[in-house]
Length: 539
Image (cartoon, rainbow, N blue to C red; front, side, top):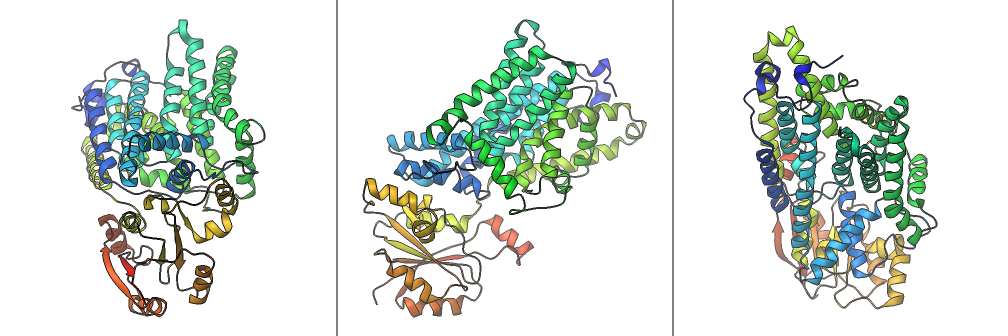
């Protein structure tokens, strides 16, 4: 397959080439403005967190460091998450609190704003790479996709390493595509450094660099390989090597531990068939356009082999590995959009089938854009995990609180995001068992602060005797009870009243619109999580 001179890099496409997008003449600056506006909406209105990792392995760790709790530090084995990324958030929190910004909601809004601004680089480099490989018309389509694809604004303001690694790896590919022979060595040096930056954020991002390196190796471009490897080693050693040398045994100890851990625990997390990520891509990118984009991607191996094989290697490795969580494939979506649009638009231009069915093609794109824009806007106002966050934000204003009891009925007990209590706090299990070494080290250096709070949990599988045993171990006794969910509420309240007969209802927190819609669509999986907060009165 070859691309005609009419679609050469930097050339504007004709109306026939662009098809349904022939009137899409918005400049890059306007696309960036669209991306900026919807990301800022998400930053201010889409509170909460999407997955366990983007809160408990980033925000919680950074705040613990600010409190002086040595989570992850000086442990026998490195963590399985990016200390570099958590460290960036520690620095942000330190700066905020040094100027008097301590409210957890306010801090998270600032963090989301910064992530939203940072994610604009995805739109910019996606546009510029497409423009260099094809033409401005295709670049506009890609830019708008990256700006408005239904999950992009929402995910862009989350604390996900899978999203944070995208700008540097796209920038690396952009440098590798530059044609200036006088600075070619410097471009590959920078590309290597940027790939390393993506790597220290999300180790799997190295697969993009390996795929591109395989192409250079096949071409026997030894000088480019040398500069690429040099840039990668310098940046990776400067960041990851230094971190591991300071806190652990040797440079890149974290990387070694990570891959050994995943090899030993490949089947201990969410698993699925080899085609799961293919279905994820087809669903996330909205059929039938998702099918068109995959077909287009498959046609670009000769046009841009480094990007093509980098993406293929990333996809194949993730598909073959048993642990399959949807967020793992997020870094691949920009490449699918870039190469998919380029390949598909060229295919449409030369296809007699599609040239004779322009209305069908236009309808496909219209469905794609309407659905994506509507859902993207809705997601930008989505407050995720509200039932877990809002109660703690409410209780953060209670200065007299020593402890809180979280009651989940017959549901499984969920880890509370204690960051939102705006004070050093511990979950009983964490304090007493899981992270005892961290707490012992903390208390060896200084006493617990006066506003320290403990949280206890209760559900149908846990007896009141077990709870009372836990309560007897520490002086921190609950002042509030948080009751999550409505199912079996009367019997649950009778059970709680047997322990705390004087309960006063303080407030009720309703689920977000997003949570209510999920409950309506699938009540068996998504529970009604109205939350009632009771103050425990004197017996």
